[in-house]
Image 1 (cartoon, rainbow, N blue to C red):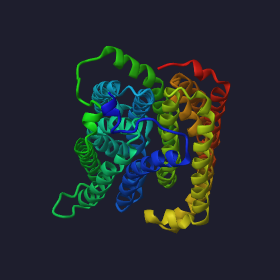
Image 2 (tube, one colour; image 1 turned 60 degrees about the vertical axis):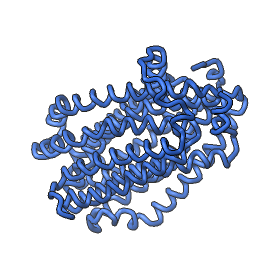
Image 3 (tube, rainbow, N blue to C red; image 1 turned 90 degrees about the vertical axis):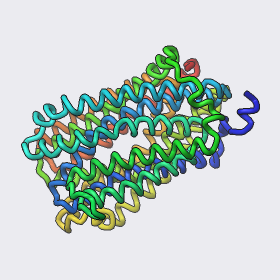
Image 4 (cartoon, rainbow, N blue to C red; image 1 turned 60 degrees about the horizontal axis):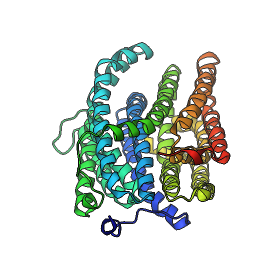
Length: 452
């Protein structure tokens, strides 16, 4: 084992250099899919405001399954990070193999649900029959990219958990370039390709997910990580590790899924306010996705570093580590908030929807930009809890936050019919409710007795 571990650094320290060394490549990796979302919306905006509005509903629907995979990713990442901190390299490869096995099963279930259940749910919830038809046709295609996405997320868990996040950039860059090219080609019928309109974005996303996955597998194999980390050495079914991964991941899967399902509920309520408000809200989702990349990168860093440090037996340094990560997260979020509030036209004009659209969106943007700062604190503490191994605590926090969130948006948007800026203020309620129990749990020290 010593000869293997000497070629790869698996233990982390709590320096700012280490934090940024892990977080910045993760930022680049997270930001690329968000660029894909924004690219889709920019090109779809060229088809009209209706297409941009429906992209919000279909995008959030797919995001439900994406974040379910992200929950599995986070659980697996915490386990791999713990084994890395313990220097148990031989256990990492088997954890990864079993994670892939679980991901494939989840992907198949997601495809079946989309094909046979989603049409009825959308038909029941949306007011316009044509919108239902367009959304269903799009999602029946888009969901076929789920297996590629899930396997890619498991690969991300492996790279972040073993302090190799720098390799994430290569795969995501490939995905971004491929997506932009095929978006333009398939939505508008360029370069001799068919003009598929709205559905062109679905095919482009699938192609880009496959290309990103293929490239990152090739790069990691060429760099020798497959051998160093004992990957694919044993593909045999391992009930103990599958049970361990699911025990660690299922609260996170439920947490993230419930969160995005509530966001879909929010978008359905927005749809009742009309296409303009739905289109504006779709751009706000892009803001959370794109500008929140720094925050989520530091959150993933908190998860992996806290677990790694605990694996080293350095529990007394955990709170100091979390505070350092939080300061970086808040700093980036404040810069984003200032940028969006000083130059709102610059961002909103890229969607090409005109001055009336921009004026309608600016009040909402101001609410969302301040919510990003609150989120930058909450997600670091929440993911630190994940790193301790008590993912059930995350689920408890999520259930409380979603209960307040859904009650608020229903009253404000459906009953009181207030402007959507009031609806987006629900983000302040959500992130405050997430922060309080996460902060309390870490400060209580109860996590020190948890083993995974």
